[in-house]
Length: 427
Image (cartoon, rainbow, N blue to C red; front, side, top):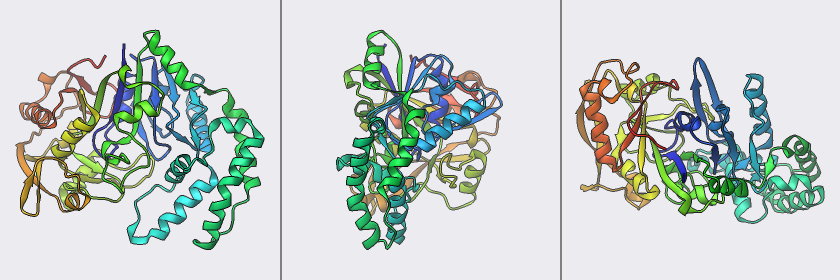
């Protein structure tokens, strides 16, 4: 069985955790391949709700091996805290595998993130302040600290000192902040070494061997397509590649081994942080979507901006990811509207645009062109098959499928693990 990629097809927070968990019982490995603890998944199992940040959602499936790949940036304190929290709730975390090539978020990365964002003032990006961007910047600048460095004190000290030579100059002279002592950072990082050692391995080798043996490997993106640093609404993006191509570089598994790419779509659209959002609502409908959908960031705790479904974005996600399927989530949230607007195109400077504009300026000026679809009032939570849905809900799904360019293979009709209608098997 080839590998599968599961990713967000909007700005993130689409319900990837539920989708991954749904597949968790059928796959052997679930791999996080990018991002850090700036991403979050909520998974509901029975009457239990789990908020995951760094850990792959597959950690909640007893027969699944969760993997943190080389493309992830890891805050060791956050990882250990998350593991401890799950263990206290009776979840077995012993199978976790952590790439020795993953980069570490250090105390100076979080400091740089917070002071630089404040320095930007009105031009701020909306970063979570958790050190993600500065860690990726150090990775690209080849002054990063990797997980494997924890196990060689001499190398760790040399790398931390080299990284702080420049950063302390910036902190002191640009931001008027106190310099950070390299010795304190090294001491703190070494304190994590023994607790992490048992999880660390060559995950690239493990995953390729697993595929050779016919095992099923699922790659789980952290944020959404429109937050991709290359293909998103730059500069209001994350610092890595949550798109399908990132699964290869972030795990060390080649593209020829990936057989299916599943995009997660909300039945409406949300976004956290700054940046353009053509269908954003500032009225009672927006507040209603936020309240019914529980739209608050799992990791950030910030209210999500809410708007109607954007088919232009969905088509774009299909194209740049090579999507083979959609998992449509939160259809139940739309119950109660007499008519539901769907954005089918944009108007930019008086002209209609059917595809996502490549120009940042054009996207900032994009106004949604809406098509009105009939709504429904029936409760969807008990629906087990597509035919159980009211006609207008079925028509809504079919319309979104046609506009987005890939088949809808599963539909979320509630937050629970069992509140999902599966139209086609993902495996």
